[in-house]
Structure formats: C-alpha cells, structure tokens
Length: 363
Image (tube, rainbow, N blue to C red; front, side):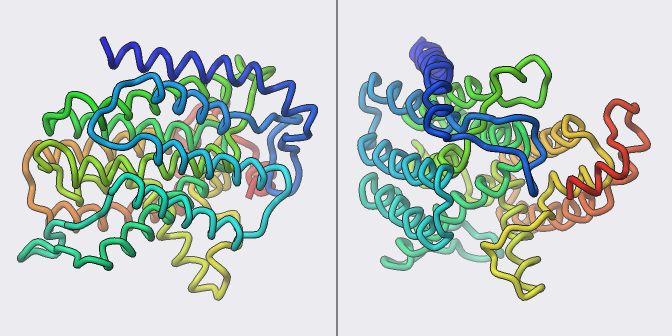
C-alpha cells in the first residue's frame, strides 16, 4: 500500500502543479517557441520539469526514512531544476550549465554517499574495484554524463519522459528481484509516477494539444541525475548487491547509446561535443520519413526491448563479460538501424509517414 500511495501522491501533485504553473509560465515568458530546429506548433509552456520536481520532492518529504539521506537528493535535484529553468528562460552558456551539473553530482555523492566502487568483470577475469579517489571521480563523471544524456533525448514530444519511465520500470524490477521492498524501489515508483503525470501533457497525441507542456532542461537534467543515482544505489547498495553493473547499463541503454554516439560523431567531425546537431535518434527516424508519433513508437519499442533483454540476462545469470559485449554489439546495430530506417516507412500506413520535403525540413 505504501508504494501505491506514494505513486498516487507523486502523480497527483505533478498534474496539479502543471495546471497551476501554466499561467505563470506564460506571464514570465517561460515558453518554447517554434523555429530553427524546433518544429512544434504554437507556444508551449516549459513547466514540466518544475512540476515533476514538486511532485517528487513533496512526495519524498512525506515518506519515512528508508536507509539513505533524502535531503541531499532533493537539494541536488532542486539545483538542477533551478539552473534548468534559468537556461530555458535565458539560454545560459554550455560551460556554466556543465559546472552546475558537476556541482549537483558532487552534492549527490557527498550528501548520500552513493559511490561506484565496483564495476563487476565486464572484460572477464577478476572484478574491477575502484580505489579511493578514483571511485569519486568516476561517479561524478557518470552522473554528469547521465544528466546530459537525458538532456540530449529531449528533442521530441514524449521521448525523454518515456525513456526515463522505461528505465525506472527496469530499475524497479531489478530492485525487487534483488530483494528490495522499500528505499530504491519506493523512489522508482515516486519518480515514475511523477513522470506519468507529466506525460499526460507531453505524449505526441491530439488529445493533449491544448494543454501540452515541455519538461525543458529542468526536467531532462533532473531525471538524468535521479536515474543515475538510482542506478548506483541498485547496483552498489541494494540488499544483496546482486545486480551486476553491466545489467544496470541495459536499463539506460538507449540514452547511453545516444550519448556515446553523439560524442564520437562530433569528435570525429572536429566539432565540440556540446554543439547541437540534427543527428539524434529521433532526427534520423523523421528524416527517413516517419511521423513524430511513429518515430516515438519505434524508439519506445526499442527501449522496452533493451530493458527486457537486460532483465532476461539478469534472470539467466549471464556472466558480466558476455552481457557487456552484447550491450556494445546491440549498440552498434542500433545506430546502424537508425541510419538505415527508411525500410520501416514502407511497412507503415500513410498516416504514420511524413512527406519527403517535411522529413528533410525536420532534419
């Protein structure tokens, strides 16, 4: 009953917050306008991130302690929400945002003690154990990378939200399989319920067009940090720590592929990894001729398949080295699939396609 109550609270508070914040966002010009690489219709309030933060923090504040400090977690998420809102409104520099992301990661690590100390044996042989100092640097880099990975996914209605929700479902399942009954499992429910509340206003469907809102950088960075923290908790601090780090990577495989391929692609072309381009996964699918809804469904299905594969490998107790090698192989195939997705268009009804000229403009 605690899980159900917490989920209902997170969902309800988020929905109420979105309705309450919409007029304020319009008056403060905290909105997203179409133009350039942005092809949405009309002015859309950027209140989803703040609403999810309110839903998550208020619900966590009502819950009893479950073996870890929630104050630093809420504080770090608040820092990301604030800098995200400022960026949404005033377009801050990349470096300023990165410094704040690193500060939030540091607050999470020092405030909650969440450190990646053991990496399993992804290359075979003995388990890799990080020495003091190295574990801190590695954890800070991991959380910062996760923050930016989810930020990169936030380029199409519903995509970042569903990506986060799928990851949370996978992490919750792993926590439950590992014997967790509260703590990490409870937080996956609270955060997942808040994401569900937001998705009512963000899924690419006609029914929500009049009340649509975006999560903005405040939401995508907040979710990235929260999910990275949960990944660390489930793999390093769950009751029996029976979840291998390689398995955790399957839960966030799509954001991971997006991040690594984006960095590699831009580095090879001599561009800054922080400089935006139009070759993210949703861009590639729309360039191939898929509609927004069809591209969303394809990516969501791929994410579900990746999480299901990770859970299956965990249940089968597959060795870390095989799971990690398979993760890399599937990542290469996924990128190739996205760059050669035009064949999918021929399988879809006409309503799921976009004219070629529109596909080109979306890129």
